[in-house]
Length: 230
Image (tube, rainbow, N blue to C red):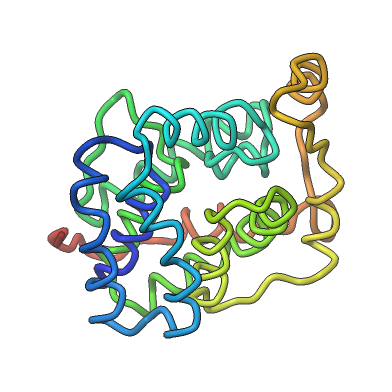
């Protein structure tokens, strides 16, 4: 069980007064477990400090512009794998089943592929298993990191840390294919509308790639349930 995943999950969550009040404690969690290297922890400090001391309204506006308004930065993992195809519904069911099989219950209003929730689930699993599961999404995480780098966003550091933790590293060709997805300016409403109307994104050999690996990993998970720990 690794609290590091929970800490990274919180850093990718919508900014709230509670998150602001506790943001600096996340440094202690990350340093205590040592799963994230010292160099990577230092790259996370600007984001943590910004959340802790920034204007809450500004933080929330930045978050919405990045992750809610722009499809190419969506924190819903299957958005980058299935788009709006019918396969997404079954993948959601499979992922929800995986969570429940291993002791994590989610409400009816939560979508299983939301990255902060996915990381919360990983925080309840043994580190080796968590790193293996995380590796199935490494292509997505790396592409998101590249897009955030282009924007000069401190959130990039979270995705770099996750890619470093993942057991499997993303292939350049898979990242490049994901990077072909339209990535409009979040203030350009016409471009955003067009991006949301595009065909679902697929990638990897035979248009499988991450989708086949992640869904296979989900459907193959038959381990006994474990008690979640904060």
